[in-house]
View 1 (cartoon, rainbow, N blue to C red):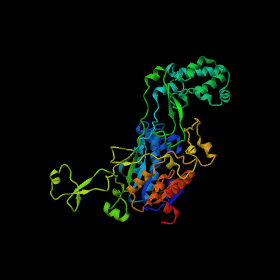
View 2: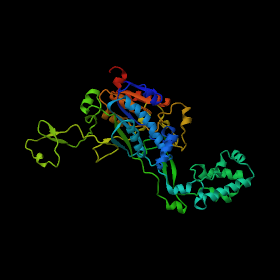
View 3: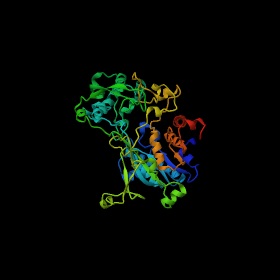
Length: 495
């Protein structure tokens, strides 16, 4: 087992790696979608990218960000890819996961760094959960529920008058409320922040007591109640309700329906589709030689087709002449009737495609790989099952919300990385683009899934990770997986 997990900024660490020394790069970089509100998955625009975006007068590229932010993220990735290009051998492949709506930024960052874009692999899965906002319910839940009864500016003016009638200063009101109540008075309605907000239910109940108001203004500020029509289980589990991939337990929540006319009008409308695939950008370092000569000199440039063929029970044959295997197309029917032909059994499996994932019968032409299991996620972290991966938004059997920061005080909380990839998927990708005994690099190591796959297959691995916590999680997962997948080698008795 030969691997290194290096803690630090990947651009700085990559600068220490020699030119043309890496056989392949398989990585899961940030997607630029502010995933779970994480700062590492979002880059704020600089003055330069803001000017470029304004020049083109183009719309926002993704949720919560402007085009300038998207371009900034693209440039940030490009700086890392330039170093990756340098350390890769000529013809070496780079496989980078991405999100569906930001794939174009991933591909452009690689291409402008000097890579050739060779293909797009689609990893399909059935266990994604919708991240759509219900428009009808949003109308009822929005802050300032009086929007369907009165103009927002009118309600803001009313609120300002109530502040004045209270006889208290804004500072005093803020202090008695315990939050920034003065922000609700802002009326620059072009702003997407506080200016368009009115107090939510709990804030209004506190605010009105501080202002000395009665219940006569509740109609402007309290949420329109929803009608309960049923119940459902909610939490961090898969479609079979038995595989807790991120959190611990589920809880029962109400299924509701709107009481407002506008809410009912937009019931059933959402803002996003259920995610069911992640695109993987396949890029290659340009070569100056022919593929044949480059493969012989550097060991890179080609894809290992036979190592990644898809097993099948379906009988498959080639039509051959007894010496050289060959295939005939339907446009050459005369050759099928050649008396000298010989049918040769194909026992290597189907030719690999650029579609992989949870594609079941009758689609057995594709490599099958579901999302990571809970046991695999937390490998190397021996904890009570109910404590695995406790994260914000997940609940125990009593409906109590877990909080990572509190759990860390108790020590080990398992692998709480939010974007863990399956080992089998990473093994498949490594075999596809890496020569035997090659060196695999992941500049966005995360919790080490690429490293787990690489050491099991006998490849040398280098992982770069900025977060020290995930470096330690990676080392524990890699060691545990190596011990499980190859106990003889892990024992030290056999190399």
